[in-house]
Image 1 (cartoon, one colour):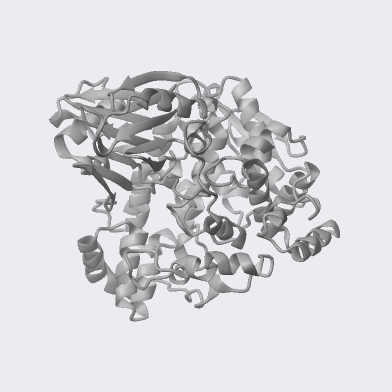
Image 2 (cartoon, helix red, strand yellow; image 1 turned 135 degrees about the vertical axis):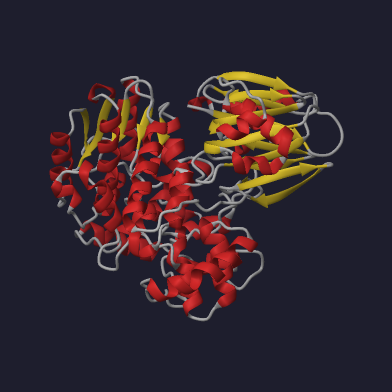
Length: 595
């Protein structure tokens, strides 16, 4: 696995303690591996953990967590050797083209670039946001780390206050703030975002997301492009040794396994399966059909395996943002992979978002005559800069308004419905309604209500980061072909009638990748829901079994009477409150460790 911590200078002075502080921070990330390199720049210091790297180009130093790659043309312009690593490539690009050069880098990475004397040049992340990077200010320095624990729980740093506003957002079931964490002053760098340093100051900038350039005009031509781009995305993420592919029996995971099997010898692949036998689902039938189709070994982890204390403490207690409860059972699967020496696990996560959900919000708003909102949505949702957003609306808008299926919009006020499970004093104290409905972009009038139609149709970035942290604790490097930048750009460019259909959102998926799928999987229209089982497993380990010892109640966040009633309903076998209780259980486990 990989990771980094850094102490960087922003304004004035030298810090003789920078290396010592960086080493202290790195000790909080020992689960990511041993420190492999320490760079002392006097006023700044970087510690990278195994799998991460430090590279130089002229007077520029870069540290890269994960992997990043420049296009071949850019490497040729920079005269980089073919064997140049990710950090060297990033350092050379920033030295030549400045902070905006991070937009040229593809891959799953978090990068930090410093000048010769330790001043911050740029810190940023890739466009999908798999590799996390958090930061806080400390005197006249900025501190960076792969996880918030390195910025919160270090003896030489004052522990920040808990951020009740973010806690309330989680408990409300609508966490919308992308930069805040559960700690005041400890912030996340958003995907496709960078912190740029200049003359002792720093500012936050947003990177650009280009649109896929393709001459395809017919559905057949788009299908060829989709096939080739996805196969290349899978191939880039396969390991040279044995690679595990998580197999749930769904379209996405089975497609990843099928494409992987077409690219590698079956002996180089392993299907990692969580066995949901005994639950009221058909998942077992689907993954068994996949195993019959492909000549790969399988590691089947029973769903009823007991959760060990270390699983809960890790899954529940990450300092940044709580992991989802169902990652607890998943940790046993990861531990089993780790024990077999398998370090890469490909997942099917994201297929719904890329090949199933519609990217039509800007056009829906345009159809309603909401020009300003459509313009903002085109920037935020499609990842376009302002000129490109305007051009997209002018050149592509009319055609799409005529041909696209436009669903009804989410009713206004959806995100401020009564939340009877929260304490009223907490809602008032943090101004919850204002937090979750305030404009999301640059003071415009676009609120979370308007964005709700798409914001959580994307893969929640917090889920990707939580998955990455869980895997890091088992020395697993998760890789997600469906969040490959080239695939994302292509899916944004494919005309909606080619990619989706009102009666079948996965039309292109079945059409293009049906050759890799067993018939039963290719034809399935359902998705599994294991919410009640997740709650049952957590309850078996003492999470939210009663209100008497509940941290979310003791901290004055959740109404004790409501929680008592919800738990009683679950014990009677009702599934209604299961989804919400699973969210509360997430924060409960986090609070037990950190508050």
